[in-house]
Image 1: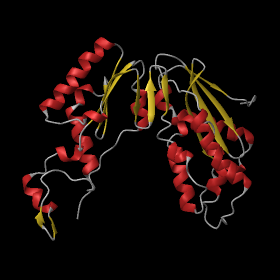
Image 2 (image 1 turned 60 degrees about the vertical axis):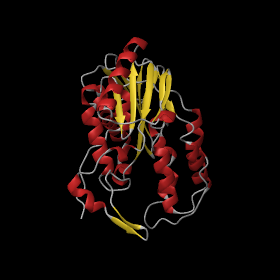
Image 3 (image 1 turned 90 degrees about the vertical axis):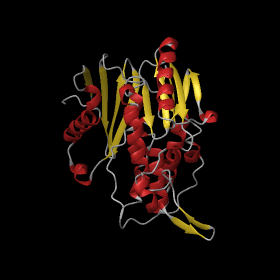
Image 4 (image 1 turned 180 degrees about the vertical axis):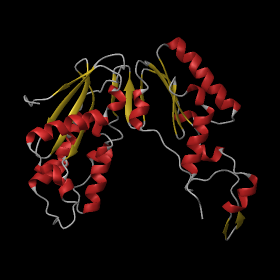
Length: 306
C-alpha cells in the first residue's frame, strides 16, 4: 500500500503573475527528469518486476508511480528555493528563467546552470531555449506585452469533434476551461452544454448546444493578450449578471488582466436582481482578493441603485 504524499502544486495563474516586467526569458527542460532521482537503497527491492528475460529492479525513480510528481516537484523547489519568486519558475521538470534586462539575465542564467551542475541534473538541449523575447511555457505565450494562449496547445480543442456523451462534454468543457481566464463569460457560453451533464437531463443536442460548442473555439483564436498585474497600480473590477450566470473582468489601465465567471446555483435563480448584482461583486472580490487586497481598486456595476 502506497501512502500518497500530500504536496501543494502551484496554480498556473500564480506562476504567470510573477513574470510582470520581465523581457528576457530562457527555458530549460530536464532530460527524463524522474530518472535523475535515485531510489533509496533500501527501497530498491520494492520496485522489482519480473519478465521472461529475468528479474529487474529500478535504481532511479520511475515514471507512473503515485508520488513521483510530488517528490520531483518538492526536490526542484528545494534546490531552487533561493531563486523562486525572484527570477525562476519551476513546474515539474520545466524551468523558466526571467529577467528585466539582458545583464540581469546573464547572471540569473549562470546561477541556475551552476545549481544544475552541482546537483548533477542534466538538460535536454533540443528542448531548451535561451535569450528569448517571447517564450512558450505551460500552454501560454509570455512576453513583455503580456500573456496569450499558445495556439499549438489549443489545437486539440479546435479539432474536438461534437460530443456524443456526457463524458465527452465534461472532457471538452474541462479542457477549454483551462483557458477560461481568456474567455469573457465562459460559464454563460458553455451553460447549454453543462445542462446536458445534469442527472435526469435527456441528452438532446440542440442549436444552442452547437453554438455553445463552437463559441469557445472561436474565442480561443480571437482573444486579446492579457496584461500581467502590477500591484502598484489601481485595479478596475467590472461586474455583470444575467439569468444564466455571473461575469466579471479585472482590468488595469484599460487593459484586461483576467476574466472570471460562473453559473448561477439553483437557489440563486430565485434571487431578485438587486441581490444578484451584489452577488457578482462579492464573487469578483473573492476570486481576485490576492490581487486587490491592500491595493486601490474601483468596482463598476450597471445597477444604479446598488
